[in-house]
Image 1 (cartoon, rainbow, N blue to C red):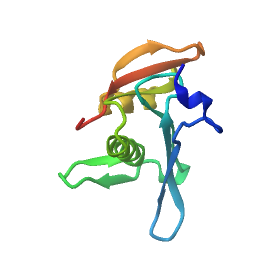
Image 2 (spheres, rainbow, N blue to C red):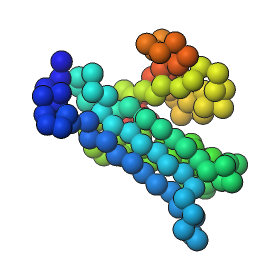
Image 3 (cartoon, rainbow, N blue to C red):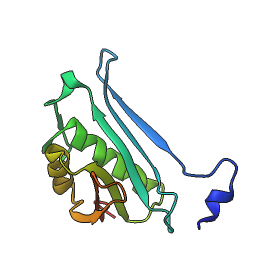
Image 4 (spheres, helix red, strand yellow):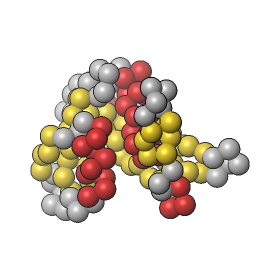
Length: 131
């Protein structure tokens, strides 16, 4: 068991990222942390949530591509994981019926599917882009 379980409180290094519109409305939320049961420090994306009114909004990337806000938040989380020195492997857990999220995970390279202890979820694993 990782020694971080013995810390008080246990050390998971949780991070939350928020994306706002110029007028101040919250558009997108992302959160990640160290998966507590794994060594080395493998990052786990806990949540990506896009405001209902912001779904379909596209973000222009520097190289000219356009991506959805959810896709953009995943890229920002992956960049922060690299900056924090997380292991280059990462994963998420997603409802196996959420076809939109599964398609997004395919686009960002989290394509290796593993079973999850919770039967309605599936784990998607992959390498951090640019790692």
